[in-house]
Image (cartoon, rainbow, N blue to C red; front, side):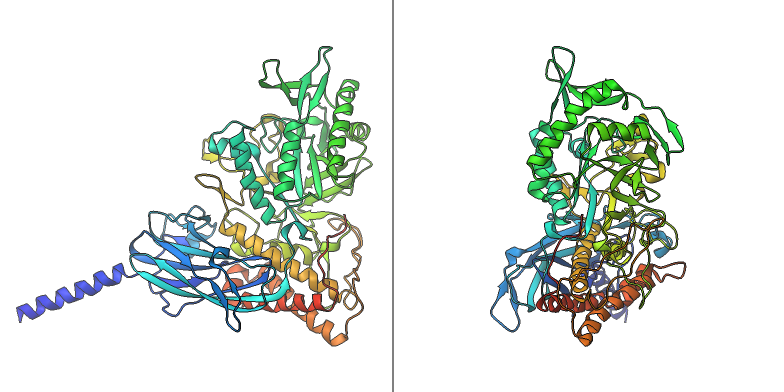
Length: 638
């Protein structure tokens, strides 16, 4: 009797140990946040399958999650070829990238989701190398779909080794629509890159060869988003924390200066190589200390302007050049700006591309604006502000990213917008903006993944060309009283951007890895959402004659009248109605998730909406639009 009891206890113990050591495997949407800390017991799905819906010439992901009550060690994953179910074609395993998410992020409402847990980290950075040990491990599968593969369903197997070998089926549905290359995206991405942050993160000298190698990796990531704007600093100590300017001055024997554009040229050429020719070049030549006032009401006199100078011994120092709007400054900057203009024109970057910036709520004074008209008559202004601006003291604004009254919600079935075709380059600065703001909650670093995934499409349905004033790699590289901070606002002369700081949205789409920047779960959601926005645009081009966009009167936060694009003949009414219905369904669901105080939120959207099915319908509609001759990709008006 006693022996039987002992054996029963031993058996129960062995079962408990086996359950603790058992590996649970399940799949999750890429918009579903996975956290390190919560108990995921009971999620195991022995029949789980990764479903990825994608388009040719694009990159699309799925994820598998492993968890165990004991540490997972030596996790490794390998993907097979993906073979077409009804044919012999395949996407080779070499075209599939396997990455392992790391718990480097957070989510602002995580403690509400998991009460009782003090620390809840969100899996964020995507590393090609798995961690040595983890109790939860998301594995990401990213497929680069060739442009020439036949549409159809492809299947393969993900093999995961984690003490045992686990096989997970992967199904890829390839649409007949071919996505444009990122450099040809119509949606405007205005992401800012930080050379100084990269140098400080990796402890390398600014503009050293190793620094340039690291910058190339950042540029590759910008290129995956089809970024449209590049910032070239002509002054030091701006809001973005640059210690040096890309422009360097060389002293002449007579006391004058000549410009050295070598750093600026190399940076621009690197950008063009990895990203593409920019739609907007911002000569970062103005900041708060350069003369101006809050919405031009209370003006501050211009101060001396710091610029990098090459010392006689080759070291790089800083020279305080004369305040703007003085004869001395005009004598210095007129030949400098002429040289920069010639350099840009040689690269095919004309006057529609070149801007002076960055003006904010503090706008340059009329004297300073007149000064730049004299020294750089080829340039318009670039504004990152709360409010909309079409011009500053008589000079046209060429680019704006703003907050207040930004965009207008569509009112179906009567009012639809084609923001991608707005003749004014107006974008959203996706920080906090109120209950009627297009991006809700904001695009915070610890914000919801759904916000990132739908950002591009929400911009265009709100009559906006895209988004701007978010950072790629402004990492926390400085020690501060509260821990680590970015270099934004680190210089007192330019540190008063407050609620307009880049960090009030997100300062870092990517994270630092051991040898260079790593894409993140947020980054990949943003990228996939841009493909969806491009597919939407393809359909809107085709149905524009049947369903022209509404005319938007100019006003606060509204850029201008949107002009319909007719790239083909009017479609048969039933065809156009069916295609437009696909778009309208998406609008209704996006507004239900985000619009106003009654918004259902991203948790509802991710869990209750069949977004993969929606994507499949959207991509099919885009393919049909192209076949009908009206959905060919093309760039928006400048």
